Every structure is written in structure tokens, then in C-alpha cells.
Length: 325
Ligand code: ADP
Ligand code: MG
Image (tube, rainbow, N blue to C red):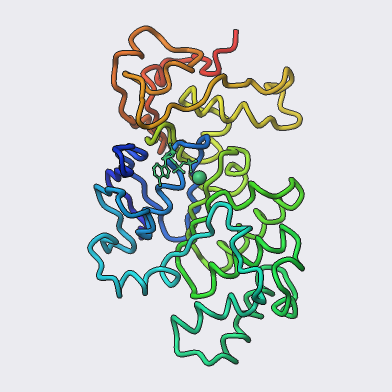
């Protein structure tokens, strides 16, 4: 059963900035989908579009279906019920967004009371249970955010996202602000929650190695489009798009001989959505680009085995997409 489906999703911000340009994605029940890509590629725009949280003036085209229901056709009352209870988001940078003057338990209890008939007392008890579920003692509910470490605050935010029992969790760069050890703990927590609670998750990160360890499938975004999609291990070990290859190469794994000479840096930055190059958007940075890549539009194309790529050269046998000599 499909929990989330995006059909040709397009988002254009005020002023004509086409941040997302035709994305098709689906997430099945119990599945973890990773979305990778450098900063500015449109990842947060997608996550905000799912729950209609984009700023006023942003134009959304295409469809977002949650459990088969079109999010953009919902009444505001229906939308309010769906936010938190069907799908919830752990926002990028949310580590700083807990209210500093309120106890964390009260902040978790609030959506519970808004979404159910729970009494204050029952909601507080539930908040304590949620904290235990994310690996914090229930008594930490009495703490204020500044009394918690970065990793503990991230756990609180995950507890908050789980407060109303969503079926889908969207985690936008949930570990980016954390140090490596804490990052691993938070990822382990997310994967165990997904497994135990049979949640679906969209996990967004610029770090493909974060996604490789947790996700079933990975979609790689570049300049507002998907350029590669497939089973996580396959995308990491054998990328079929030079951009996926560059991302995989940017995060070396100890013991893998391909990384012996250090990660292969990718020069430059993704293009600004208002000023895209013609042809394949990646061609100016691509180590294996041909002349025709500058003039030919490329579509995401199925390669078999659940994989797809938007590279003209994806099907060439034995092509080293990393451009290694
Ligand atoms: P990512 O999460 O992958 O870093 P975003 O979705 O945040 O990317 O942004 C995608 C593009 O949309 C960027 O070029 C960004 O500058 C632009 N953008 C994001 N939010 C707005 C906004 N409110 N108004 C105009 N442009 C925006
Ligand atoms: Mg983002």
C-alpha cells in the first residue's frame, strides 16, 4: 500500500523560481525512502509541499497523495487533522525551534491535546512514554530545552513528531547539526522506530552515506529534479548517474579501496533554479559529459531492477561515472 505519492510535483516560488520541476515519488507502507542532494536542490521544498507548508505565493502543480487522498484538495479542517496524525515532519534546523521557555514535556503534550480529547494529565503521561520511546527518561519532560544536549533535543523533536501517531515521518536533515557519534545514535533510533511502529519514512540528507545505512530506496535530486533512483545499496555501491557517483564518492567509507586516494571532490555548486543551464542541468560539473549533454534534455529513465537514471550515458557498459582515469 502506498502511503505517499508525488505525481509530477512542481513548485515555483514567488518571483518564478522553479525549485521543484516535475518529481514523481512514492513511499510504501513501512518503507524508508532517502532523498539525497546538495543544498539548494529542492529537498526541503518537497517535504514542505507534502503538508502544504510552503510560503504564500509558492505555486504548486501536480499532485501530492497521502493514503491516496489529494492533499491540495483537502479542506483546511481535514488538512489540520492530517498534519501530525497522518504525516509529520522533523524540520531542518528544528534543533533551535523548541520553545526555550517551556518544558519539553508540555511542548509534546500540546499537539496530543489538540488532536484528541486527552486530558492534560493523560497527555503528560503520553509525553513521558514518548520520551522513553526515543531513549530519554520520562523525567526529562520537566527539563527546558537548554538543559538538553543537541542529540537529546533531536530526540525530543522526534518524540514530538510521533506524538499523534503518524504513519509517515518526514525527517529533513535530522542529523546534519549533530556530531558523528550522536548522528549514528539518532539514525539507529529512527530505524528502530520505523521498524517497531511500522512507520514509513522519508529521510532527507545531503550525505549519501547516512541514507545508505537506513533506507530501502534512495532518490537523488539535482536542480529540482530526480536524477537517479534505486535500492539504497545499489545507488551507493554502483551509482548510475555521475551526480550520484560524486555524492557517493564525497563520503568515503573506511576500508573501501575506491576511497584510498581520498574522496573525489565535486567542483562548483548546483545551479540557482532561476538560472539553469540547458540540456542536462548537471553537464557543467560532470566529469564524463559529452558535447550533446549540453543540448539534450534528459528524462529519468528506467534501467531495470527498480533503478532509474537521468544520464544519457547511464546504460554504457563499464563507464566509470566518477570520471576516474
Ligand atoms: P534543499 O532543501 O535541497 O537545500 P530547498 O528546497 O530549501 O533546497 O531550496 C530549493 C531552492 O528553492 C533553492 O534555490 C532556494 O534558494 C529556493 N527557495 C527555497 N525557499 C524559498 C522561498 N521561500 N522563496 C524563494 N526561493 C526559495
Ligand atoms: Mg533543505
